[in-house]
Amino acid sequence: MIVSAARYNHFLMATHFSPDALKFLRSLKRNNRREWFTPRKPQFESLLRTPMLALIRELNSAMESFAPDHIRPPEKTIFRIYRDTRFASDKRPYKTHVAAWWAHSGMLKTSGAGFYFHIAPDEVIIACGVFMPQREQLLQLRRYLLTHHAELRRVLNKKSLRTLLPDFDSAPLSRPPKGFAADHPGIDLIRCTQWGLSITLPPEAALQPTLFHEVLQRFRAAAPLVNLLNAALLNESVDSVASPTKSQKALSGAGKSLFPLPGF
Image (cartoon, rainbow, N blue to C red; front, side):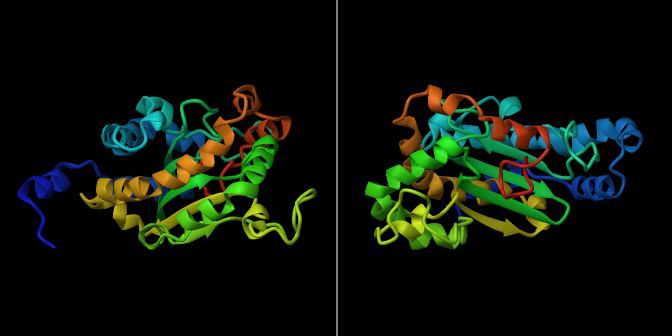
C-alpha cells in the first residue's frame, strides 16, 4: 500500500505514549498506594493524562464526520485514575490503566452505546457497543431486537468490521429472558446481556505513531453498530435512560466497572 507523504507525516506527529508511560503503569500496579502515587502525580500527568487528553482531542476532531453526537470535551471523556472504594472490599486507591469513553450526548456517561479505549501495563483495548446496560435499557434493547434482529445481525457479521473488532462481548443468558419466545428468529441476540465488539492489542501499540489510526479506523467502522443500538434507547423517553438505577449506583459505588472491560 502506498501512503501519501501527508498521511505519513500525520502518523509521525499523531499523539502516542512513551515507554516511560507503560513503565509508570507497571510501577503503579506494584505500588498502588497513596504514599507512592502522590509524589509522582506530576509524572502521571505528563506521561499519561496529558497525552491521553491530546489523543482524545485528535479523535474528537476526526469523529465529527461519523459520530458528532459522541463528542464531548476531553476532560469529560477521560476517566479519573482514582477508584471509588467507598463500598469496595478492594481498597487500592488507583486504577492501573488510563481510559476514555465516548458516550452519546443524550445519555448518562456510562449508559447507552459508545466508543471505548484504554491503555494498561499489559494491553491496549478498543471497544464499541453497549456494555452492561442498566435493567431498563436492557429491556428496551431486547424489545427493539424483536423487529430489528436481522439488521443487527447484518452489522455484526460485516467482514470488514469483524476484522478490526473480532471479539463479540455478549455475555448471553443460558435461557431466553422472561417474556421472550424461545423460537423467535433473533433469540440468540435477545439472550445477550450486552452487545459489544472489541480487540485487545499488545501494550506496545500505545507507543506507535499509528495509535491514533488504530483507534480511529475501528471507531469509524463500528459507528453503524453504535448508532443502531442507540436507536433502541433514544426512541424511548429521555427520562428512562437519563438516571442510573439503584443497581447501577451500587455497582459504581462499589468501584466495579460498568464494562466487562477493566476500563472504568
